[in-house]
Length: 118
Image (cartoon, rainbow, N blue to C red):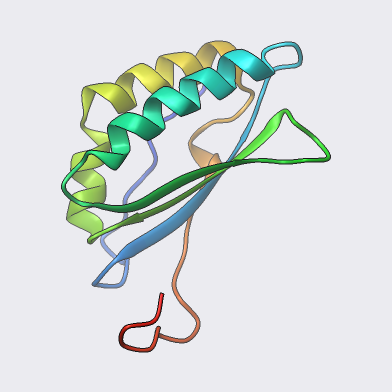
């Protein structure tokens, strides 16, 4: 059985928590997965610790989606993972994607942003 809950290590750097998930649809399930991502996006953007949540679709391969996420910190990401809408999304992933928890990649910024610049 695939595991969808990512490991959130204690070794993540402090401060904002950026990440990207690459989610691949089961062939023929592209639109169902797109709809599940759209529903998730609306809910996640309302979370107090979410700074940014932007879903993208690969133009050349419309069955591949990229979820770009930034949370205030690691704790905000842990709170995000415990929400009902994430649990529901994991049930959608089980039906409509070939991805698992390994789809999520934690990021660290190479050069810090300049004050006032995003």
